[in-house]
Image: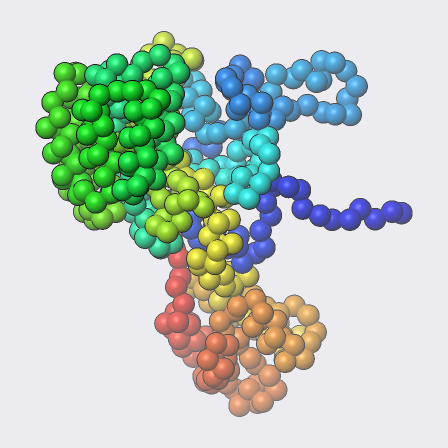
Length: 460
């Protein structure tokens, strides 16, 4: 029989146990923070009806449809079912469907795989995990929600310890107001202005370049050119930017509302203890102009902005489920592209990959007649929150120790002939290459205390 050569499928990542353990640890940390603010988990079906997923533009070409290829009927090819491409559309359907059973404001988090038929390349995947949180209101939603979501993201990246990060904060009403005041209108002119803003390099030369481009392509007033100086200024403090936004006094109700809202969100973040150097008032954020209606934020790892881009983005939207329910459901949320972020973190060795097992301890298999004892010790240690495995093969001790070392197991319990004769248990610290013996009668209790000194035990 011809063998099928195993090989990876482009865009569908598979990670080794050490990477999956790190991912699981990060997810636990993220989940703990989400739940500490009262967010509840949900999981929606991987498959949605095509009518639910209906979208415009490029994303519509990336949707994977579901059908059975070996069923030879035309009807099978038109099931009307597809894999979801994000978690926001399923959330909208879920909230509309369960509206009468949910309590509002509805606070949810969702960590699931999504699928997109993109051209696979470095940093872009066809199957990947997204990590979303949202607060959904019924008819209205207080502005505090915007600050809470941004504050949670601050705590998440502080806890993950991937390095310095900055949350870029803006409000969509500021740009809308500016475009209204300076008569930047029409689809072409608006798109031109936003594309220039989106690509600007945050430096003195970059700001001059954007001013020149706007003058050449849009030809607006000197007042707009001056406005860009402080909107994009890399060296201005957040307080200075907020003051300048207020002092501009543009004749636009939309702009004034944006100034009020961004001030409120910034002040609440300060109240939450977010360090000012981790927040950047950045009016040039243009992502989601057609979707977000107020607060918007993007998060970047310092020093990795160009190669990695935004690692977490989101904002305020006015009506989540207008396609499904005749009721206004405003909300605010963010999404972390978990697979893309961790893939970059692993590739750049920003964190050290360690153990390939959750085991803290291995009990060496020295004699099969002692298996009942091994099981008893294993159960006692597990009750203390310690992960234990018994080596299950017949092998010399040296081979067993090599196995434990390769997997990153911190401790090995040894009970050989000599130890049995002297009624002792031996504990080997694999990292320190040190051994310690304990009287058999009290050994497991003492070993448990010793091990807990040197490991971190995660509890629910």
